[in-house]
Length: 266
Image (cartoon, rainbow, N blue to C red; front, top):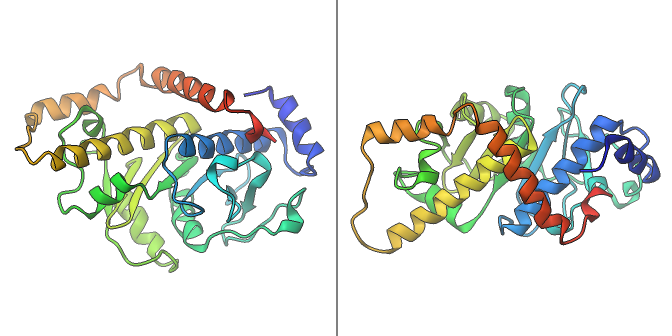
């Protein structure tokens, strides 16, 4: 990422004078998350969302302008909304409208309001994620990727398209103190204190689902590690070096989209 002073200068140039340096930095990180989701094929045309709580601005977060594809997302395409889902920003693209998907607001506002420790929230509708979400047993402890979430994964029953704000209470209850959630018959949700952590969570959860779908398709009996091994592996993912590894992976991932062009920072 560029220096925050440079990012703030970019905000002013785009007519987003109200965006301070912290907000613009968050915008750039969130736009990068969208581009990375596209890079790893975790998109569903214009549906699904990634959001970020705005630092120092109570009840406000950023989410995508409805209709912008993930691979073309820019920092200036992100819409600032309040806790009621009302668009707050004005800027270069204000005349194009600041439409926010209602179901996306319901899901993301639920997490942002209930979990102040989670600043970035990612929701996906991938084939593998939906497939596992449709399976009664949920995520099976059959891969190292899946064991990262052993005992640390919530499940939320499907209630239809998430347009009813009353569903938020049940969604956050299902998430509990976890950072990842399977929305049954729907998809995946992962979150983190940083963009790096949120990306790490959704990447491992998606890969775990892909592995499970492939393993079940093989039609052979599955090998499940003993309970002690499951617990040990889950704990290993939480060791003292985890944050350093997560940040290292994030910086490596950013190079993937920097090579494709850095337009997400504008």
